[in-house]
Length: 143
Ligand code: 4NP
Image (cartoon, rainbow, N blue to C red; front, top):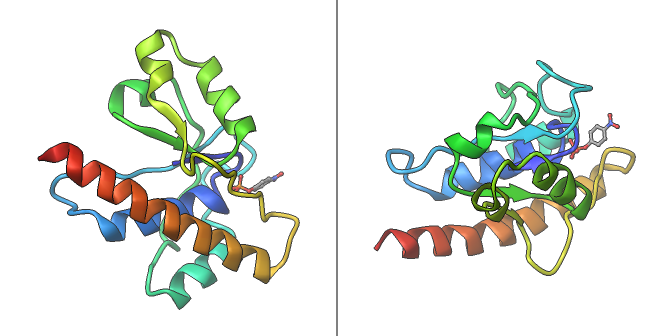
């Protein structure tokens, strides 16, 4: 799961998808394309909206996406088109580039950083819908 700062959207996406998948079969992680917040926990508004939905993300720490992530992960889901082009620009091969997709194919997950609590709720709902679809696809691909 990749966003810009790895403190608002992608840690929420990580927490939500982790809840939906068997943890013995999948590794879910998140990162940011920018390094502004490396080592920091998620934004308190993301921690709160996750907690209201029974998901704990307060222990996560922001990190920057690195090219090694292309080798560690089979799928790289990004939140918006800016993240998409940033991450794709780091790919070394067409196979790596093909691992990168918008988490919601037809919609971007809007950056809530300069918004309010309502914007974080909207992001939660979008990510929950997106992660239900991704879970179904990932589990189908296993069988
Ligand atoms: P995120 O949100 O990409 O969803 O983590 C942001 C967090 C921080 C900043 C921008 C977006 N920032 O400019 O510091």
